[in-house]
Length: 147
Length: 209
Ligand code: SF4
Image 1 (tube, each protein chain N blue to C red):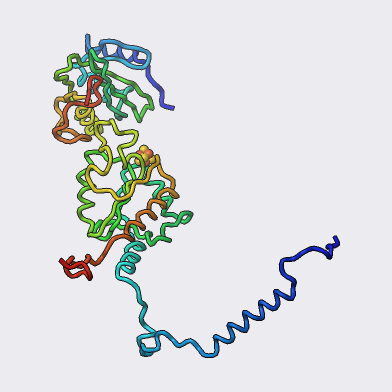
Image 2 (tube, chains in turn purple, brown):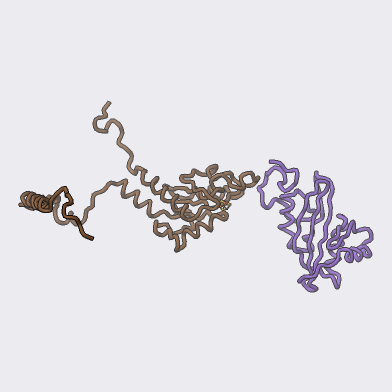
């Protein structure tokens, strides 16, 4: 079984390296500030002993007052895993940085989130709709979407 | 058990025998000569090689029993169709064993599954590529009306929005028996098609003016 690392432990490591980058931490996940996502993700990927070299998935949740983008990371070397999240406030044009430079596998999933949730991933090389067609009105997985 | 001897019969047994004898005598009397062959006027060659029927019947028969389905299986109903194709239900009985990967060789589209708007142009194109005459069976609730996904933002509420449908087979999914019943209904429909158009009115007998 892949061991789930404690969110609090990872959070304290990140806090040491990048002060003020962690917003919240819990038993099995931590919330990172949006602007320090790339730095934190790069650190998690490359640091000896962590080596989160595999991105299981990216997904997004609509909580009305903010969107949460969720990343599950796994280290194939150490066989452990962690969930990190970022929050973006405002429904008009939520923007988060793309992690495609770190993990190629984020490509289609970020496009899917853009398509269905309307979250823009800055730095994505080919950010366009993937499941719906060009010209579809709105983003159907948002809670306030109505046909 | 003993049968009582004073039981009344409608006929005595000798009467029955007499009637039978009479019938035989009558037939014998009327059968002195052989009935002539009604086709005697045809010469030998033709008699061996010709069957008489109507064009409609022959062409209808040919079309009915060589329906080749085009591949259009976007969702779960496809599995019931696959079961129907398999040995237990054996669609080959109806001449339908040849699934065509190219619509240009197919004349029947069995729409087994949910259709999304994104897929709709493809299905319409497959339909347009099929040569005439062609038919469509809408298989399953999704194909008829969108089924349980009808209110979804991405699902076409019924194939008949984009292509004409001949037979609807309800169910989610329909069992192979239901599909076969639908195919038989389609057979009936094909049977009614006139291959040769009716004569214009002024050429029809007794309908002048
Ligand atoms: S009718 Fe039912 S079984 Fe058939 S495609 Fe729709 S959901 Fe699937």
